[in-house]
Each structure stands twice: as C-alpha cells, then as structure tokens.
Length: 218
Length: 323
Image (tube, rainbow over all chains, first blue to last red; front, side, top):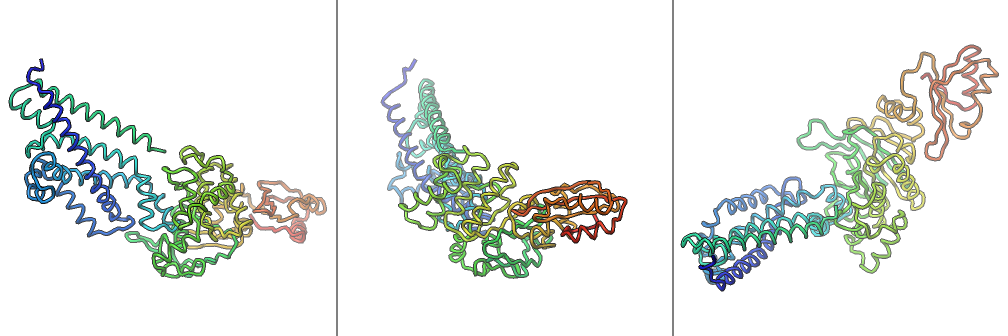
C-alpha cells in the first residue's frame, strides 16, 4: 500500500512545512498587525483619520493581495535574495510568504478593530487618553479575540501557500504532493501528505478557536 | 463652572444645525438637567462640554477653559477633570471591573502602588466591592453603570457628565442610580450635567433644567417651576407624560399646585366647606421634586362661591391656573 513512501522524506517535508509556517506566520503578524492598526486608525471618522494616507495604504494592500502567490514567488526573487541571501529552500520561501500573507492579515486586523464598540473608544477619549493609550489600552485588548481568529485564518492560508513554495524549491508537504503524488502518479504519497496537511489545518483551527474562546469575555 | 455663549454646531452633510444659539450657565455644585426628545441635540450639547465635539460658533467654557480653543494636550488635561458616563456604559469588556476602574488612573499616570487602594475605595463608594474581579458581561445593567460611575470618578473630577445614563435601565435601577448621583453631588460637591428624555429623571435629581427642541433651548429654569408650570408646548408634553395630568380637561377645570408643607394640609376641603363649593378631582399627583413635596390636582369646582374659593386658595399659597 505505501510502497512509494520514504518516511524520512515525509518527516523532512513536515518539518519544512512547519518551519515555513512558523517563520512566515511570525513575520506576517509582526508586519500585518501594525499595518492593520494604521489602516484602521487612518480610516474615515477614526482616531487619526487621514484620507490620503489611508487611500495609499489601502491601495498598496490591494495590489499585493491581487497578485497570485505563484507570481509573487517569482517576482520577489531579487528582493528575497537581498533579504535572506538566497531565493531557494525554506529561507527563500519565507519572504514571499510574508509579503503574500501580511496584507491579508492586516485586513483581518482592520476588520476586527472595526468591530470594537465606538462607545468604548469614546469613553477612552473622554478620560483624556492619548491615541497611543487608546490603541494599546482599549482597541487592541477589546479586539484581541478577533485578532487571534484572524491569525488562525492567516496560518491556514499560509499552509496552502507553502504548497506552492515548491516552485522555488522550498520543499514541504505540498511540494511532495505535487512532485511525487501528482507528477509521478504516486497516489500513496499524495494521500499521506494531504492527510498530514489536513491534520495540521485541523490542529491550527482547533487551537485558534480554543484561544479565542478563552480570550472572549463577552 | 460651565457656560455656553451663543453656541451653534453644524455637522458636515447635515441639513439642519444640531444646535442653534445655545446660551447656558451651569453653576458649581448644581445638578443640571437637559431634556429633549431624541434628535433635539442633547448628545451634541453634552459632548461640547468635554470637547468630544467642537462648537461651530460661539464659546463653550468648562472649568475656566475655552474648550474649542484647547490644543490636544490641554484638552486631555481638561478631560481628566471631567468624568463621563454613558447610556450603554461603554466598559472595556476584556477587563475586570477593577481594571476598568483603574484604567483612567493608568491613563493619568498614577503610580501603580496607589492604584489598588484608590480602586478599592471607588468600588466601595459605588457598592461593588464584591464584584472587583468579575467581567462586565457578568454584571446587571445597574451594576455596569455603577462601574461606569466609579471609573468616571477615578481621576477625581469636579464635573460629571451623564449621557442618558439611566435610559437603558429599568425604573427601579434608575432610581438607585439617580440616588447615587444625588449623593455624589451632596457629598463631593460634584457638578453634574445630565441629559435625558425622561422628565422623571429631571424631577428626581436636578436643581435646574433646560428644555431642548430642534437644537434650541426653548425653556429653562428651576426644576419645580418648569415641571409644575411648563410654558412651551414641548415642555408641556414632556411634563404631561410624567405628571399623570394628560388627557383633555373639561372646560372650567382648574389646576391647583401645592408646594412644600401646604401639600399635606387639608386646604381644599376646608375652603370648599367654608365657601359652599363642591369639587371633583379629575386627576392629580402628590410627590416630591428632589426633596420638596408638591401636589398638583386637576379639579372642577361647582356651586357655591367659586370666585371666593379661588381667592381663598390663592391666599393659602395654592397656585390656581385654568387647566
């Protein structure tokens, strides 16, 4: 049944996927969270409403989000070389993964912040809080469940992005599924990799949901 | 303490101005009510006091500062001297009761070691000591508003703004919250400005009242005077809803107003007997405006010497008006 399977390869691919996922999710949150906060704050009627800044940021986010990820991988090669010294392997996949996922996460953060009751922000203003105190003391704590839920969605999107990272030789489970399972008709490899990906996605969703419930005080 | 001088406010994209030529003076230590129907401009008015809105014209002076002209840092400093509570409480759902009350102290940069003691004191003041570690979602509406009050008092303000603070509460809880506000006014000398659409709220705690209609102050003055003898049609309607004197009165009916101790004296019976007049009571109410008792009766006088009865009633300190 599992004649074609080299478990050492599967192990390495799983590890590569996990490393790519952890690295790109970490940087995506690091970049996407502040970007989402700025997108929200500069929006119409918000604390630091600024139409030109909001329009420019929003446009940049939309441009990045509309480029298909496979294209992004290739277009990004010079920048990736500059950032991590190689455009190949796990390290080479992380910059395009981050550029693909950070704008997506930024939009999810913006949406989560919009869900915060404007009355609570007004209460903060009425107390004499500075915009900074409102962001860190009111907006982020109140939106935390939404921000975590957004990170879960982003992590799962990244799992499927990593499958395409095989194009730059990044390895990982998705790459294995395409090269062996699809191109060499090794159905058993396909099944095993897809099951592992499914377990990963299920695990991420479950952990994310648990965390959101724990954080929700409503 | 707070003054409005010919204040106008127009919002962009709005057809009519939210406020027109509003002039008011609110003295230190008084409870001042602003009443009006929804859309009358009450919320805009109260938000001008702490600069959540800026006037389009005229001058708003709060605690000696021209609110419209303050730079952001001075405005924040002013807001720390002005507490505010809200209809929907606006508590931080992600924080405990104690953390909510501590928030303005952190904002003001109070040292951490002083915060706990101050929070405990504030929670005791509003009777929530046992709920310090709960989250807002675990509290009733009245308890949430008490948290809001404790939070508003945290920075030791001189002024408390109440934006429809009891409109989301049931009548009994409303009474408790209003009693608490009255207590804070007496014990801390807090100046309170409250806006509401309910005359009962005004009657219970306010010293003076302004009636707002379509962005203009149509009537203002001492609460007893405005409540018992409303002049403007809008005020009459608001009072009628509250006073139990609604409905058409038959021709010739009189409205008798008793105030103070006279409320409890058998004046009407005595005068009716002396003048041979019969009376029937068509409606009325005996209650208090803040601490002062009053009675207001709608009566029809028949037979005997009605003119003399009216004269005697007036001589006894009863105000007599055609209903």
